[in-house]
Length: 469
Ligand code: NAD
Image (tube, rainbow, N blue to C red; front, side):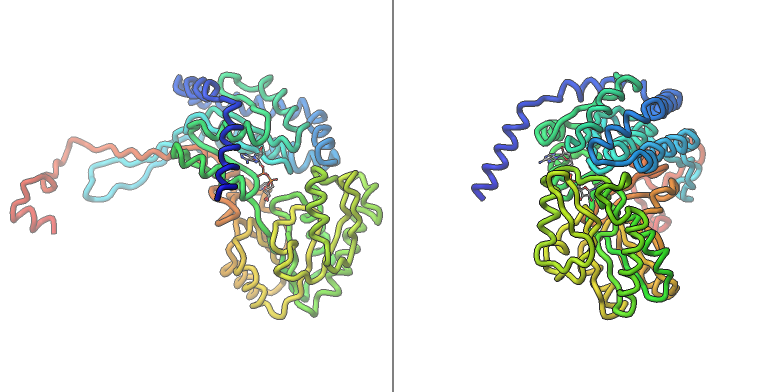
């Protein structure tokens, strides 16, 4: 208890070094001027962001290469082009998203008109993550702009080059009165969280997620938490292992496993495990060669600390493929581990790196029970041809997002919400769901002066009581 209190007061002291009250007030004043409400302003900011991405494609992918060794193509597909598509979708639909939505009215309220008016929240705080540092910082910003908000953007300090380039470029393209970038780590974030913003949108791990939520309770600030967890990948027998392995290798080793929705571990029955492992080895070598360290397509771990954390997960495990580690170069090869104990560190913590445990299970029922005994994951994957098993899986496994016979592809569909459940997060975004996340849905009912119904007014005579019952 004493240690905890000492830590808490050290945290408080650190946050006193920074004061963002002036910044937050300036943005809230600008918001109050209603400058950010018109459709034209929102469209102009989205178009400016689109220009920023197009004009600076190379500089942005250079930053991603420096932070994570991401090759140009991967940087383009998973970050830059992803955001461009996000903006284009928003520009196409924003006008209809902003329209009031008409609702029916009950008989007792007639004559009346009922509708919902989406309203921006105000000045919001967006805290980004380091693994897709540009996508995960700017995608919430797109949603915040669509809904007509001002925002402070706090990129992750762990991806320092991406953070620096966003801090340089965003003020060059966006309305400086509405948006500001604050760079920094724990101290700056703590000081920002102490401010009464109108919304916190946080992407990252569970521990900091709790800190964000505690801070939000102080001012009753609404929060969206995009967190992580251990996403299971179930592989059934009697499927095309070559295609399944290609897709799993793509979903797992993209960005060296540092993807919140990457398959964390595989569950499989005994009769399929040998064919599956053979197909996985082939798929790894066809995508990243037998020398992934010199493959242009294979990136690096974000820092040495995370490299050491991942290396510690392999202690005492049956490594059936890979296992090469070079902490100095932040390199870990694609690695598969067979049957780790459920109580081992690799099965207790979110891996968030290029290690894939494969666990042999006795039955399909045991597979579903194994997943459901653990905290709800951000994603769950199933590869099967068996329609009955698919139905059991969809109806009985709770996860933020699910994909059958592939990994991560739901991210490309702007019509689907993206978000976690339980410890993998709360709230959702992408497309219209992002617009809703940064809006308040204001209820409006318009009554008429016609048809006055006096039954609801006191005094409640016997006749009125009879009629009301
Ligand atoms: P983190 O939670 O440690 O850090 C994220 C942010 O929090 C950074 O901006 C950092 O400056 C700030 N921060 C760190 N310590 C803080 C403190 N004590 N007080 C206040 N702010 C603090 O990030 P991480 O855990 O390394 O990120 C990885 C996690 O993020 C994984 O669990 C992953 O699954 C999850 N993730 C989720 C998504 C999603 O979209 N749901 C996307 C990417 C990553």
